[in-house]
Image: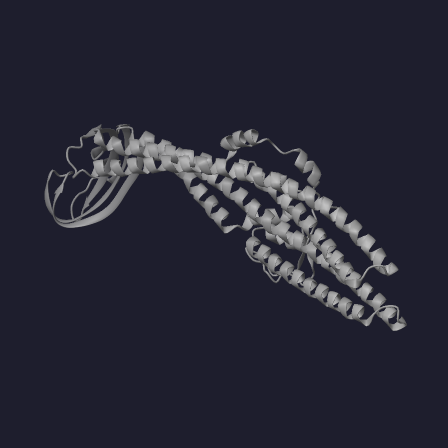
Length: 449
C-alpha cells in the first residue's frame, strides 16, 4: 500500500501529503471512511462503555468486598479498651477491617438491571454495525460521483478535440473556398462551447473530490486520482433478488431494526427493575477487623497482642429493608420507565415500517436504474451511428454545419447519459444491500488492473 493510504489507515484524522499524486481505490476509500468517521467512532466508544457496564451489572449480583484502614490520634478523654477505663491523654489508633455484603433478594432489581445492560449492549452493537453500513453507503455515493465526473471530463475532452479537428478542417476548406465562412464561425462557437463545458466538468470533479476528502477526513488539498472499479454491471443485474426475498432478508438483517428491538427490551427491564423498589430487600453481610491503641505515657500491650488477639472483631448477619413511604418517588420513577418502554415500542414499530419503505424504494429504484441503463445503452449506440452517418454526409457536402452540430450534441449527451446510468446502477446495487442490511466492505469491488 502506498504511503498515503498507510498513514490514513493508521487512523490519522488529517494528513499532509507530498505533492506527488497518489491513486485512491474504491475499497481503500471505504476503509479510510470506516477508520476515520466521527459518528462511527463515537458509537464505538459508547459500545466499549456498554460492554463494561454489562460485565459490571453481572458481577453486582455477587458479593461486594471492601477493605478499610485508618490511623489517627485522639487527645482528651477516651475509653481505653485495653485498660477498661477512661483515659485522659494522647492515644494513637491503628485499625483495619474487611467487609463483604451479598444481595439475597432486592425485588429482582439487580437481575433486571443486568438484563437491561445486556440489551443495551446488543442495541449499541447493532448501532455500530448500521453506522458502518451508512459510512460505506455515503463514501460509495461520493466515490462513484467522482468516477462519473471523471468520465464526463473524458467525454468533454474528447468532444473538445473532435471540435478542434473539425474547426481546423473547416478553416482549411474556407481558405480554399469550398466552405462558407459562416460555417467557420459556427464551428468556432461549437469549439468554444465545448471548451466551456470542459472547464465546468473539471471544476465539478474538483469540488466532488474535495467533498470526498472532507468525508474521509483527509486534507482537501491532497492531490489524488481515483481508480476505476472492476464491476460487471450486467452480471450484477442478473443477481437481483425479488421484492419478497429482499423484505424477508431486511426483517432479519437490518441492524437498526434489531437495535430498536433490543432498546425496547432494555426499557422493559428498566421498568421491571424500577418496580422492584416496591418490595423489601434482604442483604447478608460479614465483617472482620482489629485495632491497636497506644496511650502515651502508659504501659501498653504490644501491637501483636492487641491487633492479633485482644481487639479482633468478627461479625455477620442479615439486613432487611422494607419500603413504607418515600413520597411516591418509586412510583414516579416506575411511571417514567413505563413511558420509556411504551415509546420504545412505538420507535420499534416506526423502524419496522421504515425498513419496509426502504426496501420497496430500493427495489423500485433498482428496477428503474436497470431500465434506464438499458435505454441509455440503446440511445448511445443509436447516437453514435447517427453521428458517424451525419459526419459522412457533411464531409460529402450534402448536410450543413448546423445539423452536424445538433447530432454531435446528441451524441455527446448520449455518452454522458450512458455513464450516468451506469454509475447510478452501480450505486443502486449498493443501496439495495444497504436497504436489506447486508452491506459490508467485501461488497465493494476492487480496482481494475
